[in-house]
Length: 489
Ligand code: TNX
Image 1 (tube, rainbow, N blue to C red):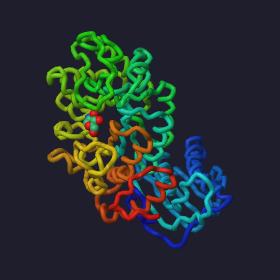
Image 2 (tube, helix red, strand yellow):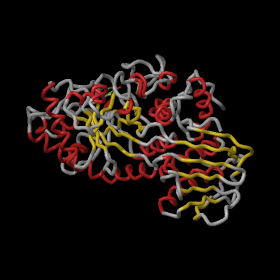
Image 3 (cartoon, helix red, strand yellow):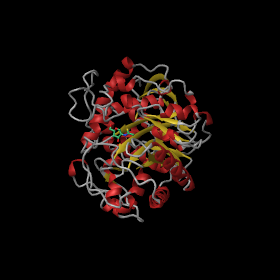
Image 4 (spheres, protein in one colour):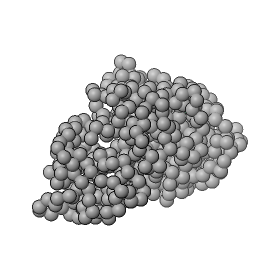
C-alpha cells in the first residue's frame, strides 16, 4: 500500500486482501457512456496480464463479492474535480468520486496497488491481490503538466499517445505540445499549408521531420481527453520562428525566406513585427488552432526573442493577447511576456528569470517550470549520454526536493497554478531517448504537483520510487536506473 506515486493525502491500511479473480466485473454507477468508457479503460489495463476478460456492468442493488465498483453517485463535492476515495475490503474494491476525472485518477491508484506484473502485455501467473485499506486523495495543484518538444525532433501520434499514457499513470493532467520552433512546424494550418509541408520537412540533425494533419491532431486531443488530460498547444513567437520564415518569404522584413535550420542555437529568428501580414498570419494560425482545441489554453511562446528589440517585443505581445482572447482562449506565455502589459487572465510560465515573479505580484497566475529543477532535458550527471546542461545537471534528488510556492520570492503563493516539466528534444531522437530523460524524474514532478508538501521527503520517496522499477519495466519504459535508488527487481 505504501508505494503509491504521487503519495495520497491519506491512507489507512486495513486487514486482509481483496483478490481479483476470474469472473470479476467492473460495476459502474451511473451507467452513463462516460463511466462505461472509464470502466473499459480500467478493464483494458487489467485484462492483458490477468487474462480474465473483465466486463463492465451497471451496478445493481446488492453488492457482488469479488467485484470492482466505480461510482459518482452522491459523490462528495469536497473531493473536487479530481479527488477520489478508494475503499478496499476482502469483498469489494469501491472507488468513489465527485467527478469522472476523480475516478480516472483513482483508477491509477488501483493499478499501482496491484502487483507490478499487472502492467504486462500478456497473461502472467500471479495472485492478483490488493491490500485492504482506505485512501482519500485529491491534488494540491490544479496544473500538473509535462511539455514535449515535437519541433526539434518530431514525435508521431503513436509516440505522443504513449507519453500521454505514462503521464496518466502518475495522475498528471496537462500535456503542453511545443508545436513550432526554428527547426520545425508540426501542425497543418490549412490557410498556410507550407508551414507544415516545408517548415515541417526537417528537424535537428537534418532528419525527415514531420507534422500532424488536423485529423491526427484531433485524434491526439481526443485520446488525451479520454485520459482527462488537456492538450495545451504552443506556437512559439515572435522568435523561434525560422521554420515559418523559411516557408513564407512575406513573413520576413526583407521578403527573403531563410533556409531551413537544423542546428540548436536559439533566439536568432524573429517574425517581422512591423508588418501587417504578420498579424494576419497569426490570426489565421490562432483561429485554426483554437478550433482544434477544446481545452481553454493557447500558448504563444514568447521566449528568447533576442533579435526583437524590447519595445517591438512588448507591442507584439500586447497585440497577440487580444487575438488569442478573440478566439476564446486563455493566453499562456513563457515568462518573458511579463515585460508587456498583461490582462489578468494571461498565464505566465516560469523557467529562468524573474518575469513570473513580476507577473504574480501583478495578479497573474503562474506555472512553475524552473529550469534547474524541472527541465527533463538536463543531464542527470556528467556521464549522461543525452541531454543538455546549461541549467546544470539535475539528479533525482534535485528534481524532487523543491516546492513550487518557494521559488517565487515575495510573490503570493496562491498565484501558483502548479508545475510543469518541459522536455526539450534537441538531443532526443527516439521514444527510448524521451523515456530515458523523463523517467524516473517525471514521477517526482507529478508528486510535487499532486501531493501535500507536509510528509514529502526524499529518503521516503526514493523507497517508493524503487518499487516502481518493476512497474516501469513491465510497461517497457526505458528508464534511467539512477544509482541513488535501490531498484526493486
Ligand atoms: C531554452 S526554455 C529554451 C528552449 C530550449 C531549451 C533547452 C525556453 C522557454 N526556451 O528553446 O530548447 O532552453 O533546454
